Amino acid sequence: MREFKIERKVKRVKGELRVPSDKSISHRAVIFGALARGRTVVHSWLRSEDTLATLNILKALGTEVLEDNTRLEIEGRNYTFEEPSNVLDAKNSGTTARLMLGVLSTQPFFSTLTGDESLRRRPMLRVVEPLRKMGARIDGRENGNKLPLSVRGGELKGISFFNKKASAQVKSSLIIAGLRAEGMTEVSEPVLSRDHTERMLRSFGVKLISVPEERGHLIKVRGGQELRGTEVYCPADPSSSAFPLALAVLTEGSELLLRDVLVNPTRDGFFRKLREMGAELTYENEREFSGEPVADILVRGSGRLKAVKVYPEEVPSMVDEIPILAVVMALAEGRSEVRGAKELRVKESDRIRAVVENLRAMGVEVEEYEDGFSIEGNERLKGACIKTYGDHRIAMAFSVAGLLAEGETVIDDIDCVKVSYPGFFEDLESVVEYL
Ligand code: S3P
Image 1 (tube, rainbow, N blue to C red):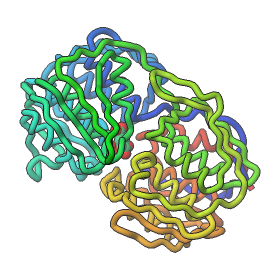
Image 2 (cartoon, protein in one colour):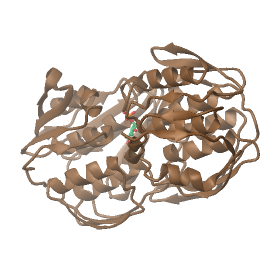
Image 3 (cartoon, protein in one colour):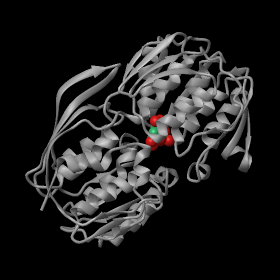
Image 4 (cartoon, helix red, strand yellow):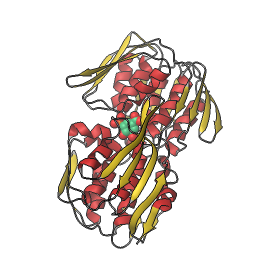
């Protein structure tokens, strides 16, 4: 655990950044590459602790991968893996655990999946229950809710599953399993969650039916379809972009260009919310890469922003950005509120608690709800001791807060940023000007 001290205040941000590639897309690129028939080439792959956890599990299942830094060549195994000789470790990564449970459920062998202390506390029944209904045998603590979980998969049948909460991890896990199940698999959710699985599977030649419904969204997939190896380009991660971008919108005179950012509408809620708060933020050079919309984002800092509300149906499009949005809210004018974000309590840490506690330490008036918080915007933050709970997004959000605060801020553990954004501090350092 490495501590980080922030002693100087940022005046403004100037320059250009290409932040690391999207984590969700990078996980999927290697998983689908391994599931496909033939070779898949992945460009600009995110090399971070989370995505390496996925890659190492695929290798432990017999997948051959040629690695040249961020370019990968994956020899697809067409859904036929080898029984692993050891426990598979998803480390800190919920996406690895949930998507790999879908993969392992299609395999007729025994495997055990575990994770780090944080992941072993997170709920898995949301995928375990429907995968069991499809025919997989899964067991573990709390009747299969917590890792380590043992899986014996095999003959699956399609199911119709209504997911009460929008979750791309659940949807993706069931689609992966559904592709090897008998008949149709249907997954519906109250709001469309990030749709990278659907977009990417189409580029692997899979046919999916996507039906917008009056109250939510339905995806159908027929079992028995093969994935054909392809090329995938991974754009810059909007969730990682959110940190330098927040620093720029909060400092007058800033100008920052973020290149190649994924602006998929199921992911860009944070950028839209910032505009609603009065930020000057534009998408330039809009284009498409591997079926995903990408743009360069230009932001100019223009002093104080206005308070804003986040409604439950908006949460999925900014779910990982809520901690940094809370920091922006703390410096905006008026009372802001986030509701319908109970899922944040079961992320890498209890993010509602972590946000409330750390903002209070910085002198902000915050009210905590079971499903969110309200924040009284302030003109200044005071330096404080920040507890990250080993959560990368809390570490990065409060590093930004620390750079804007009066006095010293100490972040108790910054190593966790490697989970999604190795090079975070170096990137910030390259664009900030201090007072
Ligand atoms: C992810 C989906 C989201 C998100 C997570 C990555 C994915 O989780 O919070 O960081 O890649 O599918 P849920 O699907 O559980 O909301």
